[in-house]
Image (cartoon, rainbow, N blue to C red; front, top):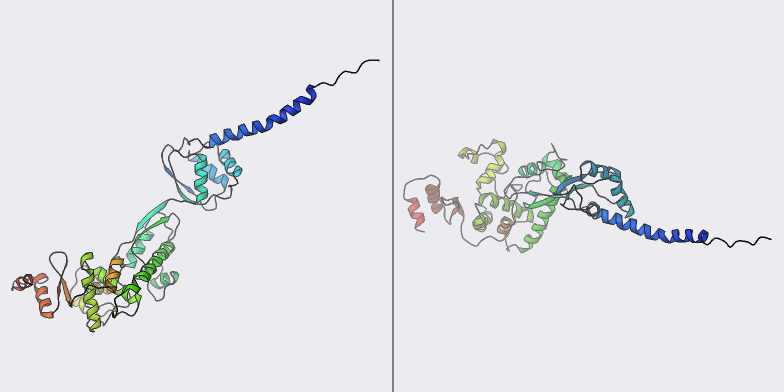
Length: 352
């Protein structure tokens, strides 16, 4: 009888050895992939801008990155996103890709939604129309209010009344491509309400102003009258006293605003006699709305004017204003600075 051979030892050892190697191989592959994904991308030797379109899939994103020379194989970027469970987490928008970024850096950036921010400055003294034109003309802003009337814009902004004049705050705003003109208007409107909410409670007592809106109207006139920040408080004080004494404001900027496109840059006596809702030579009290965007300094001046007894002022030859307590002195100042009459009026003023 033939003796049975012992079972071969290699038959049991090889599968066990291979199974033991699998985790090692997998770890090596994962480490290799991570090293690959954390290497600076050759297509980002300098910073550049990249846009993820609304609704773009991960596959479309990877393909666009590849077509623009930013990454190598699209499937590798897809694999990275899926491996990390972020294939549905990338967010649309315009991104600034920094020089030397890696695939991991890009994925983190796209998931964060930290889109490229653009800068927009709304300037004090602008009309609402000028501010809206600046907003709609800014790069990347989505225009949704083209051709809309003032009343329609006011309704879209949630404002009472038929006009949004003066109802946004002049400041620097940052926005992302795709933000709409209405988005920016709402932000500027919210900012204005914040500023008014901070300043109105700090007003001087017994002002002839019934509301924060009336303060805003007056501040807009101060904004247009003031040549600089130094005399805002004095100008506001003149208007406050005139209101308190039932004197007309007689402010040239309100006349100009009321003339609209009919104003040719030269204010004439006939213009002062025009019947408009804004001509404070013809109407009592304040005009119905602001005439411009008012800065915080002008709002503060309207609410906390500089103490004085002045009732008049006129532009002088130094880029500021000459203030007077009496009509006689004011007329002399007008003769000196506006009519250029050589009748000793300037000499008398300079001796004050």
